[in-house]
Image 1 (cartoon, rainbow, N blue to C red):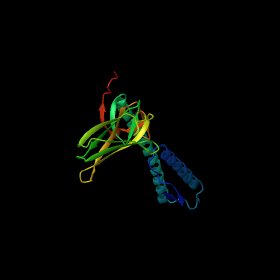
Image 2 (tube, rainbow, N blue to C red):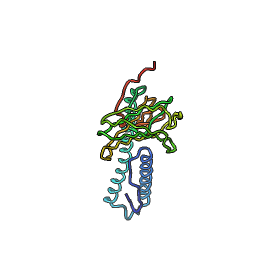
Image 3 (tube, rainbow, N blue to C red):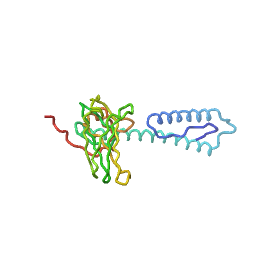
Image 4 (spheres, helix red, strand yellow):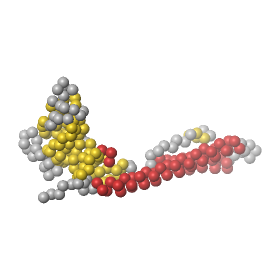
Length: 222
């Protein structure tokens, strides 16, 4: 937007930063208009059409500030509602779509689903340095399967607890790739909200609510 040769940045959405930018634009516009009125030539005052046009633009900036403020308030309410609703997940065992797993106390469970019968299924676990630490053959039948990793590498050495990446590659009898869905399994230990997005904490893993596809009661330890 430009008024009397002075350019103003168009308002954009984006929370507190954009609201602050709009407020600065509003203040600048107000100062410009006030100065213009104070210094206009009494013998050649601003035409009513021109003055009205600037007032309309002035009102538009004010409305944009109010709109952004309301949107921020709605976002905070929505995030608060999501947090409140997600509290019930704490302590529950969940399956979340992921290509990461959490090794805890020397054990980790993952699930995977095959969209068809495979000739071979290979599960590969990779550490944070990108090194393959374990490769095993998985179930080749169509459907959902579970795999529990004992935390050992291909040489039988016990690996430290932590987050690892994994892949499940399924190949059909005609060397075609079988579609797969992989998921991590773990107990929700907490919640957090960042930029309006609620994330479940599963130990060191994080998962947004839209990645959850199964919730179960956590089995009691004997």
